Length: 198
Image (cartoon, rainbow, N blue to C red; front, side, top):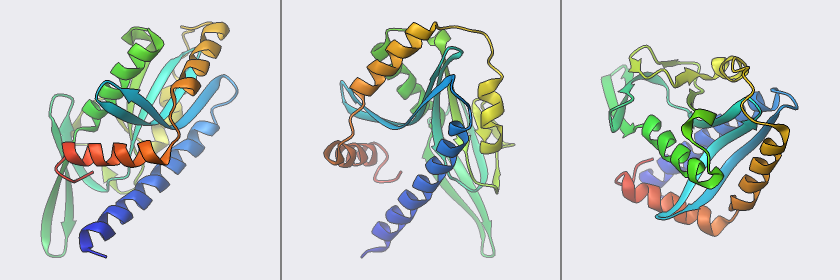
């Protein structure tokens, strides 16, 4: 196995653990919140994979999970963000596609799927590593995992009726593709956008 394949596999395992941790936090929200993890939807260009969608009468929360460590640099307008790791041999920089823009793409697809405008949605970028530093990120949507539950439950204004919530859950269940074929196809599509890097 090549080093590149080993790295990809390690990143996938790390990412899966991060998503599992966030899913566990979301499960503690209570009966008013309907949790959907690893949602995949068809789009005009192929597919899009959304880590977590929470549907409630208080709105729809769309969460992009990141397991990056180190210091993160980025803002809501930049196409690329940077992960900076400090090692014994010096500083190493790793650029990655903006999770804000990634999440915004997910939001746009959900706007269309649900036929709702942006006022019902909140996009969140959730970093799960205990050693991540977000002090250099100029984007209020980027948070640490320990703040996730508070951010969601701080929204207390009722925006949707129980009937609407039920209908939206049904729409998402119907639109969600759970297929290894589409999962592999989506991964290849994302790699083509990012020059082979996740």
